[in-house]
Image (cartoon, rainbow, N blue to C red; front, side, top):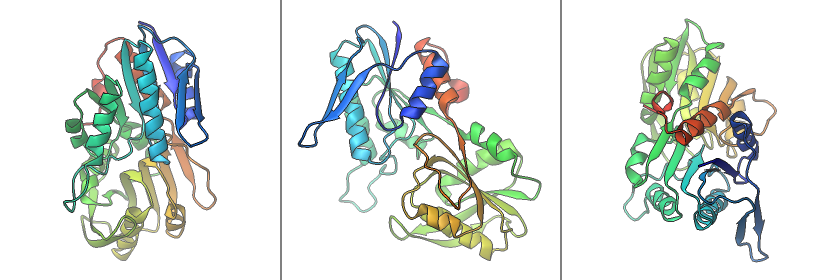
Length: 311
């Protein structure tokens, strides 16, 4: 089987970088809309008997990008692809992994079922919101981690007076991984979510007074969690020298305003989603191109991904 890559429209620049590292050209496809808004997909390269990889983060607008991926998968399967892998650098609906109030869907499970129904044989994701998502898939999930890449990028900005901070309990294991790589202590912010946009901090576990915080999370959406954590850290006496690191920079309004209103000197994130340069916030973008190209090449040649996986 030959290796064939197709990209959706969600992050063409990342897809081109992955293709360049694999020394292959992206497959030709047509993505269009009918007058009534329906998405139309058509492949212009043969995939019959081939090992096909579809690269598409399902970030905003999530519904459009998800449906585009499902249609690309269905088109590939109907065109005779031998093996079909969905490469999803950012997995939308990952936070809907349980019913918080009873009368709600489990969105992450539904998306996993849709991917399987579309003909996908395997999914590759990066720093998904929780490792429990693997249990939602009836097809293999390769859960990669960008923590090593991001920690090395952050190393240049931390010192002996730094502390890795988890902005909530859910990020505790993530913070411990950064702390192990960088040789730093850990502190944990305990929060209560008031709504999709607002959170309240109850207490902080660990010493932060006189230390420079390195706040780590898997994603920054509206910035409410990070903003509340920074405010609490400042009240606890930390240095006004805050570094923020996250794999996925959604930066939904008002995230930029929230970050720039606080002493966050730099944000380090990956290019899992297109990152718009903004004034007032220094951003450093770490590319996932090499990580994802390495994973695709290993999958294509049936080699282990052990050292690339989220643990």
